[in-house]
Length: 533
Image (cartoon, rainbow, N blue to C red; front, side, top):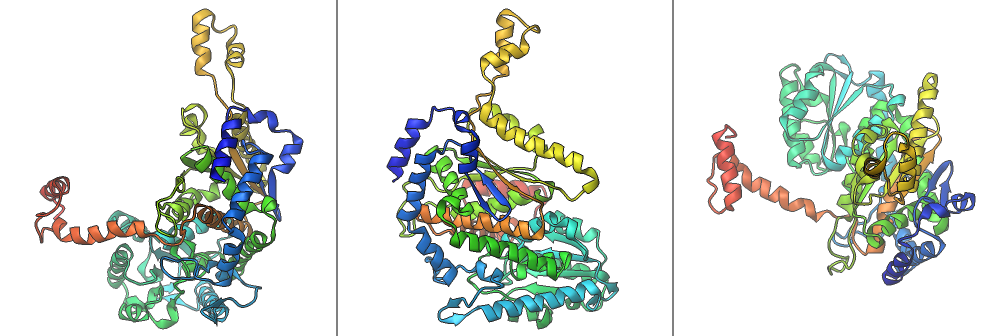
């Protein structure tokens, strides 16, 4: 099938797909789930190409593997685990079995405990030693930080609880900046680490504990933990009533639907958090029920495969024209690159095609005055994914939101249409002539024929954010199955951790650098000479 797709691409690669985009194509090359619309008409995918891409899904048995995931089968084969972040938002569904045990009673019990604690914090029944909680500091890293940090910012219009802050980097500047603005006596610290051993998280947690201990009598009384390591959280002084665990079938970058989302729940309230879950549940059901051609996650994945594995475009720009989604590109970097940044297939053989693309981006319109120059006129084609809402949350500034939407639509149109040399000459006619006209005109040529997709929705609400995140989660799943890889392990992050642990005594001056490569040893010497040890 890969050969057929490459042959089809070779046949159509020189085509100006702008010529295809009429009203009929605009209707046929979209997919919709509820009020969310995916438009991929501004790509070079045509009816034949789409059929070949959909054949990839059938060839890889995506439907059966999708059903196995939702049913609790151990599809994370390298670790022998189920992959059931979907169970965390299965509010209205039936039982979900893992090794013959229904996990839903435990999921719903934990959700109810979270809701009770969040309500207590928000209403002041749980207070700090100086009064009602005013600030929540979430300490985590990776999936224990990126998801909730992104969602808290995205749902800022719904905040009616304490201020929420996030600390992830082991660089002391990160935690120092956050704690500087908080009162220890009215701050709740949430430590998010499943094992309670993550070195960056626990280093920051101990720093926060020392900071709080300088001002309050009982530091443990203002800590909560998102962890399954009850013995370690108890040793840290955290009451079991404020410890919220989750199973090993919830991967870190897929975990904000459960306890990792506690900071979000405290910020927006349990009711809005449930709406967030229901939005994701609605996308789950759409993914399970919709035919492939009408299936948002499937088509988003297939267009991504067309651009990366078939066209050879190695990067993907995520460009939300919704400033509330400022952190979405960073969140998707982990979701997609940690999931599908693999070099071997499930059976351990080398991949025959490139793995996932480099994901990056910033919100519009800021990016237009930064890197869009490269997107429009650079020598590499960068497929773009725009996200845009029909309405913002600032009703009195709706005219300004209309300008934002116009910019978003203009960028996708400009990428497709471009500007040829004749058009550039006409534009400059009367300003220049002769050789200078030719030179100036060439600087104003846009090749166009650059693909983009647009995801449009009415407004960024908790439900819609849930839909968006679940959409991208399932996109990762589909791409992973088609590539034949395991999207749910992350061995690539382990080697650096191991080496950092071994290097710390050298950096501190407790060991010499004997046995290290020359570059590393020289860098240790240089940094020690300037005060690192």
